Image (cartoon, rainbow, N blue to C red; front, side, top):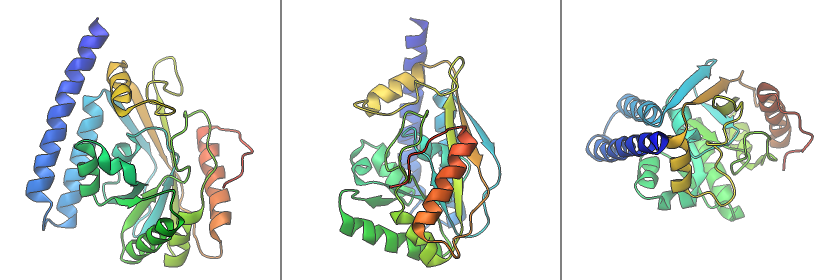
Length: 252
């Protein structure tokens, strides 16, 4: 009973925070400086995690200048967690995220690049758009698994978007994301897999006692002299090692 009441309390505050975020983005983002937008994105993301009872534990430093971020994918909260420590990152995300009520609009307002994953032609467009953003000095981030895992394993990595880093000549920085909670080194509440809906996931996360989000910010990898498949192999090995995952599944 107390757990359910706590979840309801948390979700009520989250709803208010989401609506506040919409108001801030609508009022302030148009014509705002990059620094102001980043400050607002970081504030909003960090507070959302706190309101849901999540504790953020980053470890490491992001590379200066333009670079491509590649992270393993566990939860719909992955973008929020990364934005809480790297608000300048422009994520590549599945196009259906735009259809999420309210949250989809906010994600788009943060500069997200949307992709139709089933379309090879659209994937090529996103590679070009990402390369242009990197060449202009932006930080672009994506999830090479393409979808969420249960956190215990890594799915095959898709190398296509790594071509953007190769084309722009910028480094790739791997991130190792892990959600944990008391008694569970890998949080079952944070897993967003199978037929789990966004509302079901929200309830599970809000009902948990405390979920810790660790972000291992690993050393950047120079893209010079590597093709996208070689980069994919190296990235997957680095992230797997940081998470303590043993797997022989090759990248896609």
